[in-house]
Amino acid sequence: DWLNWLRRRYAHNRWTLTVDADEFFVYPFCDTRPLPALTDWLDRADLRSFGTLMLDMYPQGDIAEAIVKDGQNPLEVACWFDPGNYVQEEHPTFRHLWIQGGPRMRTFFADAPEKGPALNKIPLVRWHRRFVAVSSTHMLLPRGLNVVYDRNGGEATTGCLLHAKFIHSFAEKAAEEVQRRQHFAKGREYVAYNNAARQGVSLWNDWSERYVSWRQLEILGLMSKGNWT
Image (cartoon, rainbow, N blue to C red):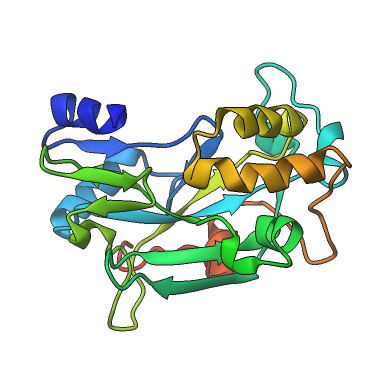
């Protein structure tokens, strides 16, 4: 609610990028082109929103031993991700692509994959005071903002949010969120995280991929430059 208020007050008719403290925004050509180049292209293409896959990053080995020092890039420690293992479906009401999968679903929700967290986010939006975020940046209103994919079978321009959640502070954060109960469904997913973290947990497996660049993610089909050349 307070983010909606801030954007309504200060971001009318401006591009807004909304990410969590542990999310790193990756878009096509981000290694050579600044963010205004992307928003300029979106303006020329008459697009109001830009979608991403939230890509969970993790270390090789026990999460509790993945120490990130103050000021250190956490992706130097949590540099692995799942290259596949994702499912998606179009939401019948809000029209967004509901994406699940990755290391959290296979590790924490293996017995109930339908309860796996949503990995779809729309962090970049040319905001209007009439717009609202319904569930963080997972889905927005009006519904047209959620159509960040090509409904005709083509490739829309998309990105990724590299999610550096799984480092040494994970167990402490999970226990805190179980008490706060402020996340979706009163923090239901954090109960699963907390139970696993107390026993020690590793997300790495033989199919894990080490992150290199956005081009690697595009080759794997996790994001696309679409028509932006």
